[in-house]
Image (cartoon, rainbow, N blue to C red):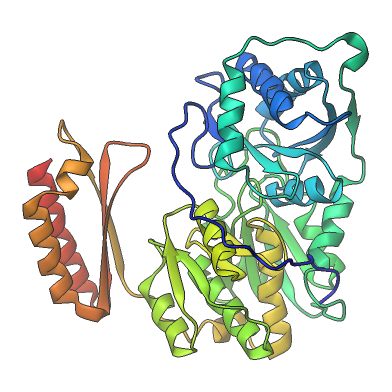
Amino acid sequence: MGRLLARKKARKIPRVKIVERKYFGTDGIRGRVGEGFITPGFMLQLGWAVGQVLGKEARSKVLIGKDTRISGYLLESALEAGLVAAGVDIHLLGPMPTPGIAYLTRTLHAQAGIVISASHNPHYDNGIKFFSATGSKLSDEVELAIEEEIENPLVTVASDKLGRAYRVEDAAGRYIEFCKRTIHWEMHFRGMKIVVDCANGATYHIAPHVFEELGAEVVAVGARPNGLNINAGVGSTHIENLQRAVREEHADLGVALDGDGDRLIMVDSDGEVLDGDDILYIIACSRLEDGIMEGGVVGTKMTNLGLEHALQRIGLPLERTDVGDRFIMARLQEKSWVLGGEPSGHIICRDRTTTGDGIVSALQVLAALYRSGKSLKELRRGMTKYPQVLQNVKLGEVSAESILASEPLTKALQEVRAELGDSGRVLLRPSGTEPLIRVMIEGQDSEQVRTLTQQLVGVVQQLA
């Protein structure tokens, strides 16, 4: 396999714990531009705080990349000023996919990488994510140390110690070459027509080139960002745009990325959608056939039961974590496994890269097509998804914790699980951002699933 990441023997890593934070959420800091923490003043302080924690070495270097939102200019400048005030050198990448920033942070030997993006959110939101020197998400300890520094007064270093700002002119080219090296150098996609939806986001100047340089005929859509149209009716969260384009162009398949390029949803030649569960199944089967599958697959509580059963049939275990790529990565490291992901299209191939990467994941699927000689439709046939119903219940004065621990709900849950048996699954969980309890049931019988969901929702509503 080309030049891939060297892998060291994984040490046992404790499972991720959710630590109470003031500023950081489960994946950086995010919000509406001009409100809360997404303001120039806070970004200035944040940049300085990051410099205090991560810029201890002489002439420390931090990379800054962003997606295509117009507010990226604003936040980039404020972060740059804070880091420079702390004595840290800045290397500006311009518009770059989140996984590309992770890769360049590692290969350019920076102390940290900063991503200015709100992923699949609309243009009026923005956020900040960080990568460590290894291209991985920051640990809880480092995030908490940054939060402590944010509370301190900003003190500028002496003039002769101030940081400098540079622009990395070949950032896109470096990342394009990395993506291509994640499949065997002899592979090509000549004779294949692919529609690539870049969500008017950070992959607009990268993803089409990757597939073209590997021989495919590419039709690019969502590749004309104007600062305001990121994720607007395009990308992995608006898949109908890609379905239409694939059918109109008579393409072999379609690839949909989100605004920052870390998610992937695909479409076959008939316009049928393949989500993250389908993609995980195809990659796992291909690797198993090639004898390079290491361990099992890590999914989340939202992973479809159909994937779990399909993997069982080919002898692969599935382990579930809480929703979020940091939890998936932690479990992969703990188990020394390499493949995990979410239905949303966040796919981690840990033997290829250090974070979820939409382009790299798409290349792994295309590599499976190349090796097998089959179509995308044929490769997905081994997995049948179970019908799934998800309903949110708004809460009043009663907390989610007390409702979930109540005797009536416990009894109702037992009855539902008994009726489903091994052919279904129930999940109740509180929302992390809203006063809601999410009720999800899946099973082989769609009518049964709908009926049982309504029964369980009724019990939660009575308790709320």
